[in-house]
Length: 324
Image (cartoon, rainbow, N blue to C red; front, side, top):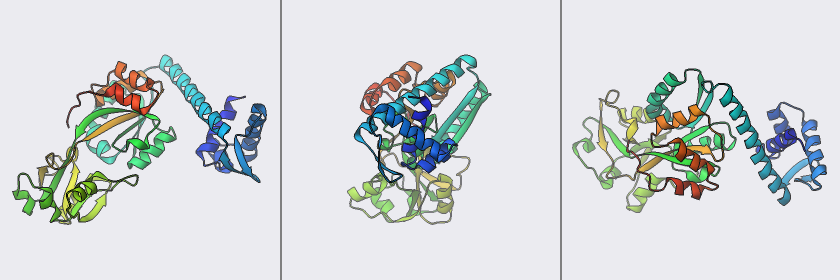
């Protein structure tokens, strides 16, 4: 059994059992991938995949166990490489982060600025997307950190470490009827169209559910992934903006009226996710401390060693989180 055979196996699974796509991802030939998979099956004495002609149709029950262990072995080989890099030069390397527009635009700039001052030779890669897109990047192990809110079920392989709490605020143009109310109710909002974030595709979104529970209509004029886009259409009079509180800034939003929505909308928790069992470099720990000071190296290591999502939650249970 050879390590490259396990890499070929993982690539085939990652590419939906499409050997041609796996070969393309590995920058090798399709016959070469097929041959190595067949050699691995011959050595093991059982089939990893069921076949129809030349096509792989599904992973056999025994094959699932092989794939699971192969992925763990490949993760450990990456950890060994990271350990080597750490000892060679702890000030150099790369850090890849997948996150939402709100985090990238409003929360991370000050963190990244301080991080760059500490580690000017570490290359940063920032990937923006929806929760589903971030989950895909994390599942493919293409990023070191995922930073998002909610949608925990999308990230079964990550240790999700809580960072801070936040709520939604309302944004309206000057002169809007809601601007005269200090504490508008859901009923007040329901009388107007709203402009807010794209709803989740993976489950019931909290905002429609909130109005539905109250028996109130929710007239959604427009949804967008980007808080700046939402503000643009609020300025055009399309509706009441409902955005994350950290997306409201005094300098940039002087022409809008911001209304605290903490009495209306439930609190959310933003978390930072890392693949469980991952070996982190020193600068990665330092980035986490800059983003969430309570994430000490000791606490992070406890989270990474936890074998299940439930055990990870136990590690961070009772933690007092700051509010944005």
